[in-house]
Length: 189
Image (tube, rainbow, N blue to C red; front, side, top):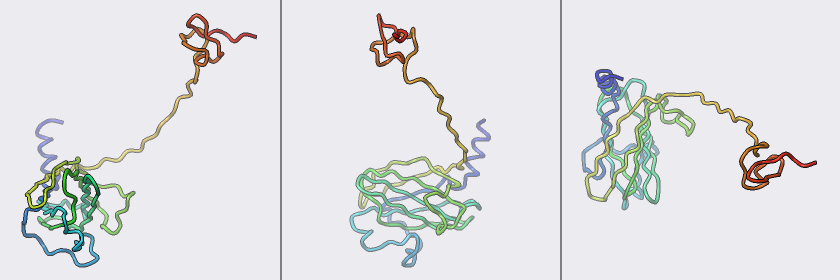
């Protein structure tokens, strides 16, 4: 892909400036109502990282954003409904501390319809950062369109043993069960 086309793809991505900021103290919208997809409980906020999620723009084919954080001792996943177009910010808590791998996925389906089998429209590369309580940590994702493939496999039917005349070290390597002078021999009658 030439450089001009590559720059245009980055501009069209829209979610290319998805930024997470752990313990930044940035102001964002109020926490979602109880039972909502990004709900933060009191238990979630003890000894864990605070994340500020900021989206520069949201493409029209995205209605749900899922962020997964895998820490040394636990994993946290949050699904957030998003609206195409305007920037948004959302404060989230309950993320693991320490060395944490973040992955973001964006879906065309509403968050309530997203299951483990739902294919994301956009995906990020994994981003690994250290999340420290009370310290600002920024995570930046580059979102990419997610392609789909139909994959098939064919297993060739190869013999599990060596034919007569093939180099061998023991009789069990030979189909005839006979190895002599380093070569598989024909089976004796």
